[in-house]
Image (cartoon, rainbow, N blue to C red; front, side, top):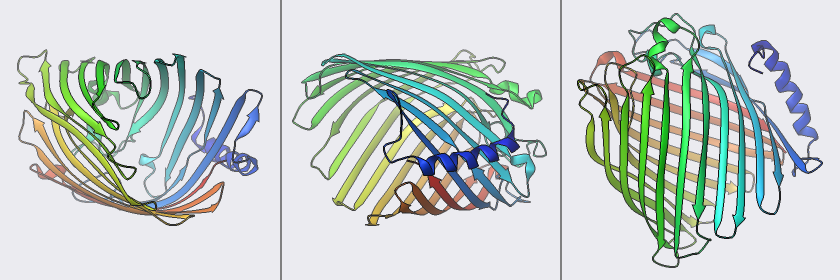
Length: 391
């Protein structure tokens, strides 16, 4: 599958357009399975493709994104298999062309009314654009093509407690492995695998209010870089639906990250994640998301402590026209080290459902990053026109 040629994907996308136009809204029935094909095509402009602080590279680009999903439902289970791809062709910067692919599967099973099980797996080939990941900053190697990687993920979740019950417990475990496949003279330090597992207990304290307690453990292992670490999070929270118009979830707690290398100091401190939505009228929805957590850093530091907040507004002007506005800001503290980044982003988009199977879209996005280290500064604006077809 991974040998699919990039030029050939353009023809594949055109075939998908023909298939989706012929499909009905309910999908294509194949015996006990239902097939959902879809395809997208976009033209865009990026004024800073490599995310540099100076000598910016700008380019028009074309995107093709075919996908297909198979689903089968029975009384107690659901099976889903999905394949999707995205090919980008930068007309003035061929080093930034990429072909991403993903094959995934999901199985959901309810053995009883009180218990439910979910198992998933994914195999994907992705990329880091120039200026991201291992090549952040204007001083990195820019003349090479984007860094490509293979990723494998699998995981499971088990829950016990019926809908509406006073108590419920959920346990999960997942594993993923990332291995870079090109530019190996400097991408080897980005190869890693991670185990993540945890448990959450939920207790209903009101008709629409649930208190929760959770413990999550992560074990992160690098193949060549000396940054192996363990992370533990203990959180308490609450989820609520005050009315049909307002709902949210908040979790706060203590986070600890310890490195095998005694030179790296690790981290002990608070974390949080709060999300909420408000629908004052049926056509309008406001959203809020704020969180604080640690993440991997591929530079000289051991990890990055990230605090971010996002605000969103969705409005249906008429049954076929939807607009979206998003605003976000983020602080990234790279520890240990002198680097500290402030990132501000803004985006606006409009989607028009021209036909039940045909969506037309337009969007604009702007991102600015100011860093304590000037080589990591950048300013980027992007415009996009999109056509999407799906049953």
